[in-house]
Length: 109
Image (cartoon, rainbow, N blue to C red; front, side, top):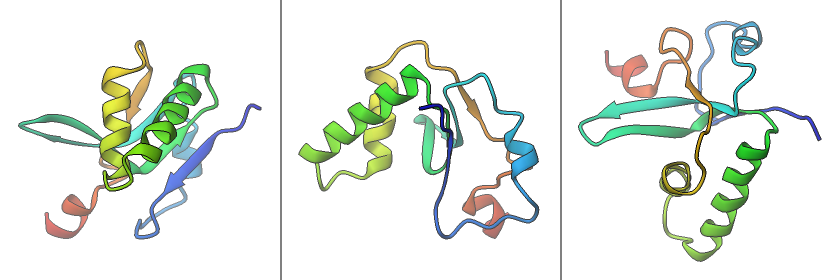
């Protein structure tokens, strides 16, 4: 199946139609909102565009498998671990903050 999924947490806010912006994110495995701090980069699972590529399918199959055994661990932590340790050569792009702001930036800055 060649279906792309735009996953959005329920508490997300859009100031304009995101569809034209999403068209910029083709020819990749997926795009995420990202947070950067002293520990590195975290892919935020609350805002993702996932294309049906073999690598993205592998990422989410492995994430689902690991979630079954770690019910108390947050899904975002499991996803980031899988991205970091289980699939190589992923093509991931970061959503630009100017188009998709995280909550900290939107509400606090």
